[in-house]
Image (cartoon, rainbow, N blue to C red; front, side):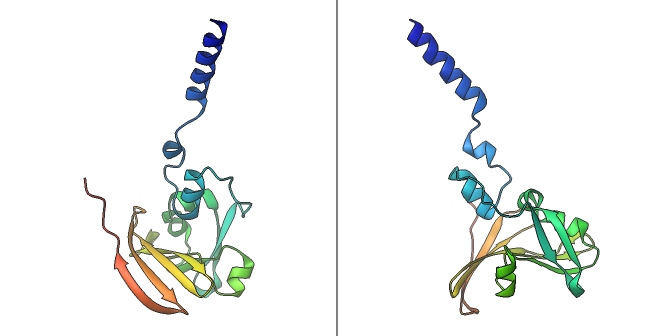
Length: 155
């Protein structure tokens, strides 16, 4: 009887303290979403992302805010144009772009991009302003090989 009571209390405590992976990961995109769903510990990356804008105008944005909405970058942009982020200084030196967004009047203009470089190949996902992926492109050696739309899930 005591064992049964202990098991019930333990199960109840787990239900109250452990949110589902989907709920805990809501609003995340890209690598952050993948890590969250896999319950991987967050990478020791920077807590902020440096976006390099037109004419060298830089802005630092909280990583969590950018992950939830790329619109954050444009809301803080002091100038219209393309803002580019790199995962690290080494990626910047190698011109391996991570995120790219064009801002106009404080809003995202068109689609924004997230780059996934791997050796000589890069996959680019294009997102709308709501954060839905709408198309993908494959580049090898910097040359576009294939681009295709991502169809919305059927209801």
